[in-house]
Amino acid sequence: MKRYAKVIINIILILVLSCSFHIEAFAEIAPNAGSSGKAESATAESATAGKIVDDANSFLDKGKESESPINGQALKDGSNIIYNVLLILGIAVALIWGLVLGIQFITGTIEEKAEIKKGLIPYVVGCIIIFGAFGIWKLVLNLLAPLS
Image (spheres, rainbow, N blue to C red):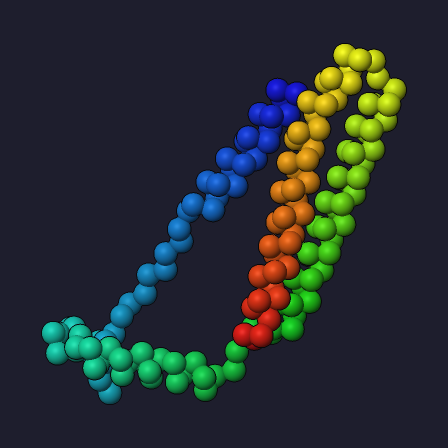
């Protein structure tokens, strides 16, 4: 049992560490590029609030003019496939684990039943985590669906 706890702790640690890394993109900024295309040095006049707002609006206009390379329907379909596969896998694991614990409880001695009752705590917590995560995922998708 201690071995399984170490494996679970290692998996959680890897997930936490992988989510904590930030990827930053660096780009050359040409705030005052003239007709020659050569960037001039940024000055205090080019960093005024009005200039920043104008640049932001022109950036948004360029985004509205171009076609989006992201296919929303393909993302939705892919997300639904992943959701359904993982949900079925989670249900299968929870069901098999519950059946094994139930059979062990029925056929076990008093000492074994006490050990099985201790094993029910991680089972219940795991079920709550699995089905809670899928519930949150579906809730977020349903809340964001009107935005697309």
